[in-house]
Length: 86
Image 1 (cartoon, one colour):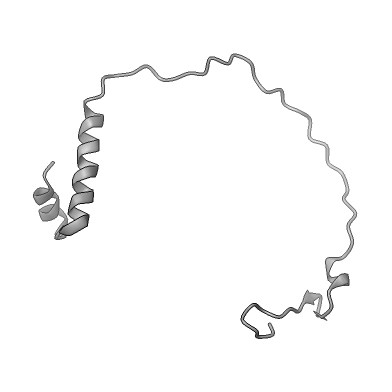
Image 2 (image 1 turned 180 degrees about the vertical axis):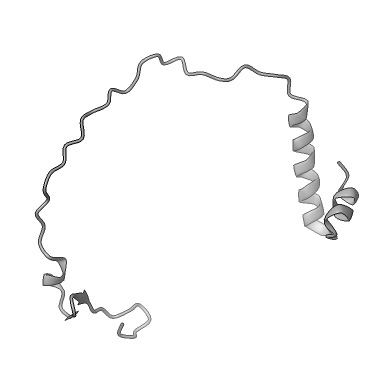
């Protein structure tokens, strides 16, 4: 594939580093087209990870807003990094 043809088809003018990068991508694509058919890879590890049963449980935790210095309607009020109150 030619950069000029791509430029004409896409109605985009490629120049400088963009043209150089695109040429490199096209070269890699041409190399990949020449790769012969290869069998899919497999793992030599024949075992599997055993599944474990899910165990649901109650998690009792404190209200995080209780320890906040400023609270407004159940929300925590804090000073933002840029110095405004939010």
